[in-house]
Image 1 (cartoon, rainbow, N blue to C red):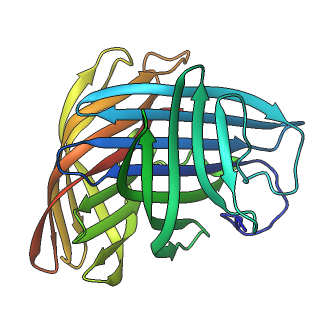
Image 2 (tube, one colour):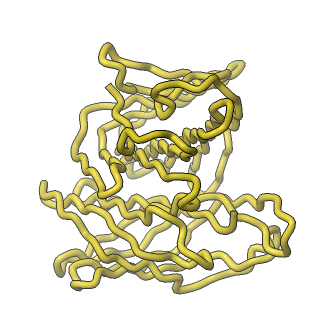
Length: 286
């Protein structure tokens, strides 16, 4: 059964975030497929949004964008099918897969056994799963990150998150629960799975090492980052291979930014260096 990503308290308005990210593991194919299932409560109805992107090489294909409203439910965080979005749910109510089906196009994500699972201080959960992606009758094996978070609307907007992998040697996820003031990255925390060990990493800092102008939003966005922990256990340097960013609407001179970076670089963990690749979820502004 799908658990709530936060403590069961009176709902005065929350944003529930569910992300499933497929990272392909075949050496001759670069496939990254993030799905975002967002829920916003606190009004007379529950607002829902489902999005999906297919990254093949350095080409981004936004294949799913849906918004709809449902009546208030006791468990609003549970994903619901809508339109081209189909869900595969097990006997216990847990999500076992997602599908995008529209006309002759179909994309299926199947969720397999869990490799690791962590729970954060605010009730957020992160799971690494075996998975497979089926596209045009071709099935590709890979790793799946299943992320669940929730924030009170009055607290602010959810912060960024990032998933990194180095083959089967190292898997890492880091996040900042709330967006920092001024959009610059704030306090991060996360977990690293290496050599079948699960190691929490607190007091992380993700700094912008390089920026470029994103003229559509009239602001700078990062294209390079340094990652380090206060105790020196984790150090890394990352750069953007490609990105998919969208400028939002606002009355001010600077517009919101919403999107992803396909990142690669090196991560040093406990003195060992790993070549990593992954996905960074990034937002700026309201």
